[in-house]
Each structure stands twice: as C-alpha cells, then as structure tokens.
Image (cartoon, rainbow over all chains, first blue to last red; front, side, top):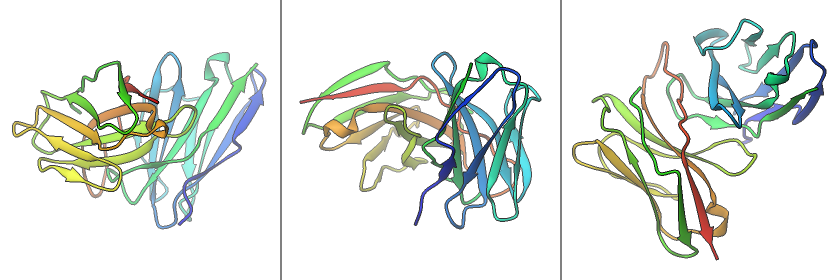
Length: 112
Length: 114
C-alpha cells in the first residue's frame, strides 16, 4: 500500500505570494491532518479534514486554509506569505478522526 | 489532552535495548498513549499506542504502569537507524466526529552509538 504522498517536496516562494500544497492520503484513509514544523515552535497542528469537512483547527491565522476533495486528497493554501511561514509542512492521513496517523515526508517551504 | 514529560536526550549502545520514559501524570481514563518518532527531516513515524495493557509490535514494546501515570517505550535491539526524536503523546481515541489533534512536545532525542 502506498504511503502518504506530499507534493512538491521543496518550494521557494517570495514574500507576499501564495502557495498551495498537496497531500494524497493512504488508500482508504478518509481523514487528513496538516502540521507545521519549525525549529522554534516544533510540530504544530494546523487543521484536520474528514469527509470533506474541516473537523478541527489549530491556532493559525486565516491566511492558512485547506480543503479536502471527495477522493480524500487534500490541499492547503497559504496566502500573503511571510518569512515566518518558512517551515516543513506535514500531512498525515488516518482511517478516521482520532485513529493512528501516518505522515508523509513533508513539503519544505522557504519564503525569501 | 494530558501533558507529557520526556527527557531531552538519551544515548544507547547499538544492539542494546533502548528504554524511553514518559510521564503523563494527568492522563484521563479515556486517553491513550501514542509514540511517534521522527528521523531528521522526515515525517513522524507511528510506532505504537496503548491504553492500559502492555503492547508489542514489530517495532517496539510499550509498558504502561498500573496507575497509567507513566510509560516506557522499549526498542529491544537498537540500531543506528533508530537515532531519532521520539515523541510520547496522550490523546483521546474516538472513532468519529471531532477528534483532538496530536499535540507534539519536544520529545526525546535518542542517539544510538556504534
């Protein structure tokens, strides 16, 4: 069974731009969560989607948004990028909310 | 979710058992103990979880004390590839509806020495 796939793996953007990251969950998994990891803040929860509905949201500004499609694939979008948005963005999939989560390799975003 | 406390770092000799402790003294009756690890620059990897009974899988064993206030993750024969940050997380496990996210602390940096 293929694991969680995140694309792209690396991304460089300029301040003020917007970015979209993609996550394909493990086949059969219906829940997708997103996390941001920075050296200073560690791993922080962004949001979780299940059945195309956002079920839980972390403490991030509205510039961070996401969505889930009917095939459970998910995207997250960050608008008006700031230097502090440079981070490793991780996607995790699980069979349902609260079940074991399996993480992808992440997308390394650098904002310059 | 209950807060966890883990040592910042630990060393272990290759081939020996690595025992990683975790304190979760405020754990509730319906909260599970989860362990994940993160090898440098990779996504976290699920290892094991348990409620109150000891658990074992192909990767590790999880020993939870009777009062559930602490647990130990055991890697029976550590290899160099087990060098990683290990996170102990407690969380309510629900099958549907709104679920609490994984709250990662600082974890324990395990270094396996040759």
